Image (cartoon, rainbow, N blue to C red; front, side, top):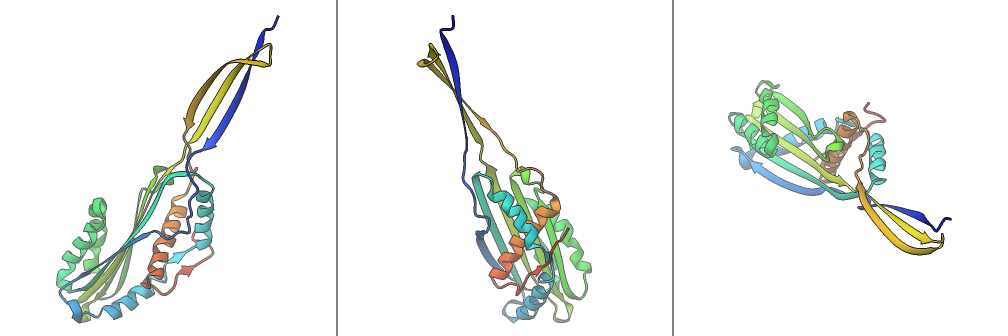
Length: 241
């Protein structure tokens, strides 16, 4: 004769909050002056840098597709920062100093930055060189660092000016909380005993290509450049794939 039965109730809840990916990153800005100081042709170099960075292709449409994926998720931690450094009025004899100071601003990535910037010694006498760096190239890592550097060189005026941007994204996905309650019912309808088990399930964002990630970061970095009037426009194209 059956004296009782067990009923099971399962609850699943997402821990964390949705994030607003359109929100501007926390912004930091510093200016470092070289030997040319107040006598530098900063305005001319700023125009050259503006023209060069404004030509970099981005796709806000493709960046928005990744944003929609992120906005559907729950996060226990989300932090965006954008650090912009300006370097004004460095003489050509200070090229090594300029490169070192730019490298220092990238912290633990300094060695990689210095290696890439070493070619500035052989750059054209008049022009702008643009460099990009990505570290933590997978969204699954929870840490993404994207750097963009523009160096304007003018040998006729014995001068160099530069601007760099380091965009940082750090996040943790919220876990899924599972709660299962088992109730023993005497005669099938009188609850006499209950036990509860709780466990947590980790989540992942799924696959995000490096190209999608770089485009997303580039939109963020150049968006801050434009918002702070370092560039006049963004070269928004349908696709960068």
